[in-house]
Amino acid sequence: MATKNAVLITGASGWLASRVADSLLKDPSTPDAHLILTDLVQPRYDSSRVTVIQADLTDVNQIDALFATAHGVPDTVYCMHGIMSRQAEDNFDLGMKVNIDAVRNLLEAARRHGQLAGKTVKFIFTSGLAVYGGPLPPVVQPTTIPTPQSAYGTSKLISELLINEYTRRGFIDGRILRLPTVIVRPGSPAAATSAFLSAIIREPLKGEIAHCPIGNSLDSPETELRTWVASSKTIIQNLIIARHIPASKFVAHTRVVCLPGFTTTIREMLEALRDVGGPEALHRVVFKDDETDRRIVSSWPEKADNSYALELGFQQDEGGMVPVVQRFKDDVEAGLA
Image (tube, rainbow, N blue to C red; front, top):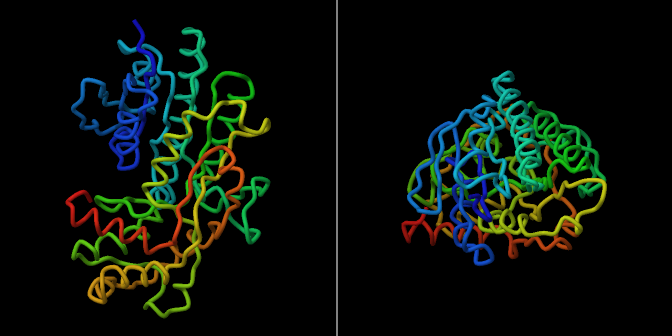
């Protein structure tokens, strides 16, 4: 017998997806939810409300198995797997295979199995700022045309278009979330170009060296590079909110939502590190300017209009960088990061 409120999460071994799983299990609105977690590397989870399946999402048969567990067809899919930005840039073919082909296969499975079960599966897709590029307005609006300048951004945009089309046809109920850069991510550095934005806070607060690929010192002109970010706490909260928004609240022509964020600079981030962690923390940041990283990050928006996302019920950070850095420092000292 199918389980009510079954949720499938792909890329579940990743830091963000695993935190979404934690939050879903604590979500008071669905206390009976059962999670199906999958990744190429088997997720580690010990809960009677979690089924763990190791799977290669480039294999259609392995995807089908995710929709045929004892819990039946999931009501919601969180599509969070992918080859990250710098890795996708360096290995184009692998990025296309994982970031486009596997998403299309997952969409087809949600469509086919959903129709057989008489349900329209919610399909929540994590996209990002990399869909933008080239000349951009001072504030990105919902009408701003995405023109990606990287393989990763291109694959995200292609997947967004597919999800919108599948939603238009009633195959799925898509929710496309363009995430700001998430800070501060705990754990090991990721292969994403944006990973250094967390590393230059995380490692110094843990007493370790971090490398900053933007500029050659705190006072370099390059560190005035502006970027659009949100705290990990707020991003996770918004990923849970996305599941509960009625389909009727979205505008008719697209399911894309730029999640709320705030603008900061590399210099402001490092100054917040110094304010919270002291001069010794800042001294652990080693500068080595990287033209490729700087080019990619510079192509992303500096600011987006939060109004539509806030109307839908998504949340935003308040207070800028210092509260974000302080929260992470508190987590480090409490052994939570």
